[in-house]
Length: 440
Ligand SMILES: Cc1cc2nc3c(=O)[nH]c(=O)nc-3n(C[C@H](O)[C@H](O)[C@H](O)COP(=O)(O)OP(=O)(O)OC[C@H]3O[C@@H](n4cnc5c(N)ncnc54)[C@H](O)[C@@H]3O)c2cc1C
Image 1 (cartoon, rainbow, N blue to C red):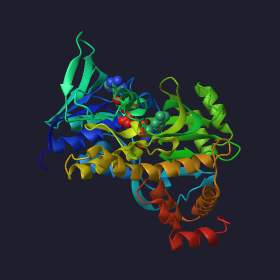
Image 2: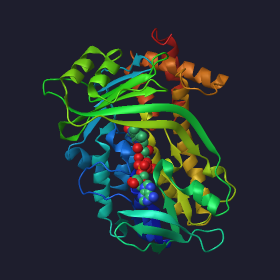
Image 3: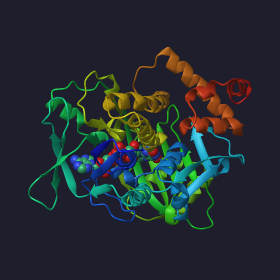
Image 4: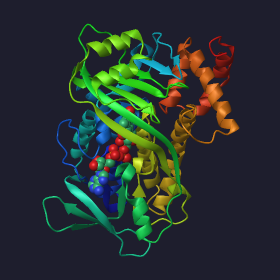
């Protein structure tokens, strides 16, 4: 692609920031990423990404997009020690109280690596791109907006310098995560705020890094979701360097304790015997860490009639999802593809075109998340008839999927964002869901 601008600045070097920088590097002469943390070459947890200490799983769709943006990425990741789960036998997925089929059947891969490991690998690929510079230990101080109606650049504070620096840019991208500054900046610049949607879920994760004895056999991906009356769950994934990460979770006051013994007690009621045995035999490798996720949160930038030229918003700064469904990073990758398509048609009206294009994948994941959260009675929120009917049907599919590997795979293709949710209404799915004894 020929270059359509001189300088793009990305604020934040999380997964979304790195994906957008990769796409911008094809369209702009120079891309600068501003990140307030120090970024190690290896996989280290850092302050700006506190969720990195909790289970992260890269869905198939997100993995394939990363591989497209950085050719050979997935093989490289797996060779370096990440795990891949391609077969239903690799999974123990209990959703709404229904265990998906564990028959031997291959499908798309889910990629298992700790968040710092994944980030470090993307960062290494990014650092090899000549027109991308990462300025670490730099705080974003504010926007430069000298031209009415547009953003001309950004002011940054280097941690080791007294004076702030002004960077001019053709486009500035806010990828600073859930607490992104765009709402504040719009106010300062005299623009209307984006309408905001929230579903409070008051979810807490308590996570423990583990090593399992070699003779213990459990599935690589364990996910036990909440059921009506028990708004708690467990996720445990196999990671690089023979480590495992277990996160206990609980909604709305049913929060997991912050000690390992406490977590074992917490999951005892619902974890099956083989998983409980693995947990009891596991060696804890660090302290338990907790994370509070108050609400699903979406800012509807696509609905704004006016938005400053030269500014974009990306990743969790637009929409942050219940982490249990593991879709945040993949939706950020889908936004990267949407931006790549928009840039192919130049920079005219870029923000408007991008927000509209990005809203499509954001909406699919949002509907899936909200629907699943509202299936839990403890989560407050309106449940109109169509939602109740869809949730009833989805429960039927989940129940039938336990005996039906094809149905399990189709369900996973939807939740991995490979296929649209409408594929669950295909005649063969309807037939199997309604005729299966378990479904009924
Ligand atoms: C507990 C938990 C578990 C999750 N599990 C999964 C999962 O399994 N799969 C999945 O796909 N997603 C998961 N997610 C979601 C996922 O973490 C995010 O969707 C994803 O990280 C995209 O975020 P981002 O890059 O937009 O923001 P972030 O990852 O939050 O990155 C923002 C970056 O901006 C930097 N920054 C912030 N402010 C400034 C500033 N003023 N100046 C400079 N830099 C700044 C931060 O340091 C950070 O590097 C999970 C989230 C949580 C909370």
